[in-house]
Length: 198
Image (tube, rainbow, N blue to C red; front, side, top):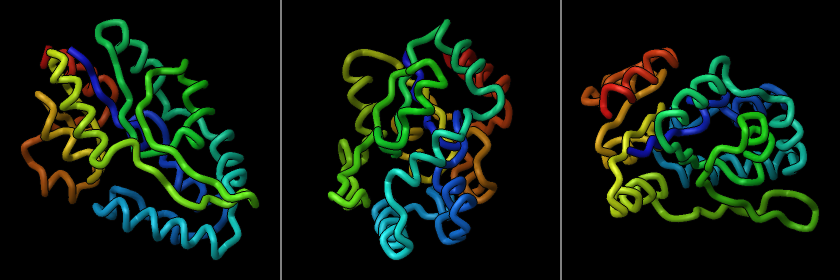
């Protein structure tokens, strides 16, 4: 069995919310918990960054001061003792580096950014359309059972495709919209949910 985890909201705080708080730009607090259309959300974010003059290095400075969610590192270590774990995220390698270091460099599949000569984010590039879902399908194609956990709209396709999907600290509206998935609120509950599916 391979365990697939979302990153933001499951193991680390939401990067964009932290950027919003640091810059005072409330409009950047919108995340995939609020907007199911990822392309629409990213175009919105990039337009704000351009308008406000926020560079990639500014965002990276915020991320370097962030830490994993309380208990996340311990949960990840316990899960890795039992199963192979892959983090499937819609974040970017240019963002994730400092957090991966703090968590011991777990395997991460995510996306990447292009940056213009002035240091502004010019565009975002998906590793693959519906990357989380397709990653799960690929892993299953290799003969593995997949159990996945996430918290947001952009995790639902992954959870549906996995042999078992688990919600972790999701917004109530997602719980109501997708009642088929068990809901967990603590790392102990999440670890127990993974163990039950083995």
